Length: 316
Ligand code: FAQ
Image 1 (spheres, rainbow, N blue to C red):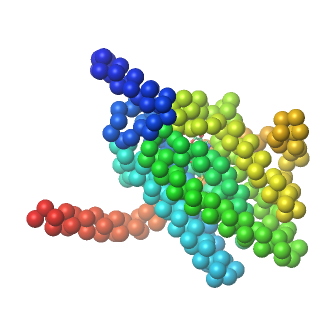
Image 2: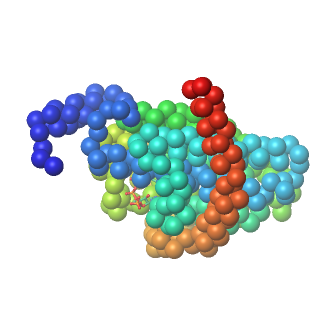
Image 3: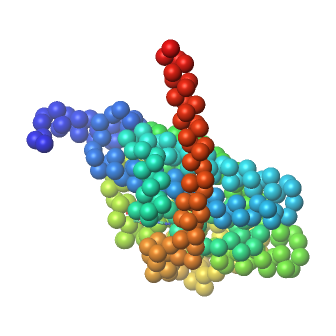
């Protein structure tokens, strides 16, 4: 297709909108690359929320009290809601939800590597809330200022709920740390296993992040992966130390002159292999997702039939 002066006007209007910090809305003109980047990020984010329900749901029947069970059920339901808002935000960009599910189930799209590790003890549930959701909040609060309106608005609610989850995780850990030596050891063991996957949640280092530069220029991402990872470490380490726990990083130290923590290198080979091959649990997570997707077919069909009937009634 040949480029017209109208295309140039539209591109200029888009650039000005981004420069002013205004929101881009679904009916606005946008470059194809911007749309594709948003579809990629929002749908992978949605997949993470949905797959992220699995490790925690496995603990619902094993929660140590009715109170903790009710909290965990609510958290898992919240994650389903987050997936839903995010799939809806992606749909405003002209993609179909079924196609996104297909890309998840066939491995064409990714979800966060953190959900491919096993949750071995009840302390893992607390650490996932406290540090896992804690990391997710640091990553996602800036996304509530993302240049694409529907994604930014979804993030406002998601972040409020994630911050509730983070406090619940902190509360669970606080209770275990006031318990027996065995319970305290369970928490330390969970911190040791989840620390590095939490740091990986922020993505590859800035040097290896293929999308960051353009996403930041478009105002999709407001900060780089490394900047947000550093921010999380600065927030998390004092909390870990407050409990008398240790961080499994011999290189971690406070850098007085920089005013932040310096920390060791992530095992990027492990990150890449879990991202590409699914790590310890990738196949299981997708097989489970496929099974519940198939089992839920009748619910989707019933909802569609009901919606059709409502439409017929309204147009009669
Ligand atoms: N795992 O160039 P970049 C949650 C991929 S929070 C797997 O840096 P970008 C809440 C990346 O997609 C977890 N893949 O890419 C919860 C790209 O692949 P592609 C989800 C990863 O997009 C908590 C490639 O590497 N949060 O679910 C990971 O600029 C607790 C190159 O990377 C979000 O999705 C990873 N960790 O930056 C639920 C937040 N990192 O597409 C239950 C929104 C990177 O080229 C319990 N997303 N990749 O095939 C983002 O902020 C960004 O997309 C980043 C990656 C920062 C994740």
